[in-house]
Image 1 (spheres, rainbow, N blue to C red):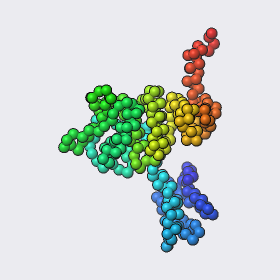
Image 2: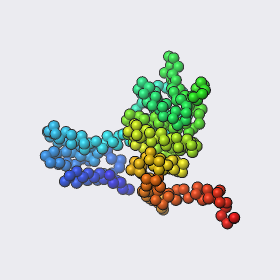
Image 3: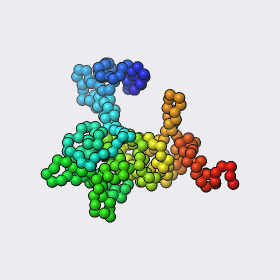
Image 4: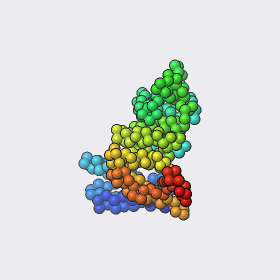
Length: 293
């Protein structure tokens, strides 16, 4: 896919086939192009393929493989910067295929016979040492999302807990949905102290391994980054399993620079622009202000 100010294009290359469709946005999927792969004739709109005429049984698999990337796109979700739960009580409703609002996420949690709720509770407990449960009063169509301390029998509405816990519940629900394979998370460290951020990193890694998920994170947290690097250094994460990009604004553009990570958890260049101020302050704290003995 190529994006330009006026529009863009879809480009596909399969074997000897090299084809492109130029479009303008918003694109209504109304442009089609005929392409041939061997004896198979297909109609392509830049997104999906449809066969033209009769198709043999052995060609069905090829068509499915060509359309598989569309399913990958559908499995990508996002946890936006504005997230979490702002009210204590919710009304039961059928969640849509791509839940985003707090009501949709809350209903996603309590639907499905408690499977997602149990998953969220399990990972939430590993991060915060607390229980997470929904509560529906008998005969009511309304329900509550609640948190309870392990050594305290008093349940507290999630909205009355710290926002760090609140927004983590939202992220966990998004990531653990059956329809999500990849989750884009903006600022996962919001309202979390450094120790909790480290626990969150540990749990995210566990979910990637056990649940078969992928995460893409944008962060300004040195604690979050250093925690991931520590797991690389201690052989809990392979350098091949994680990729870092340093984003720098240059004029009207943002440059993405891939960072090289070795098996010691070290980044070539040390992410110096990202962590420079913290390093300077730490030096002054240990050695004293510059210019003074």
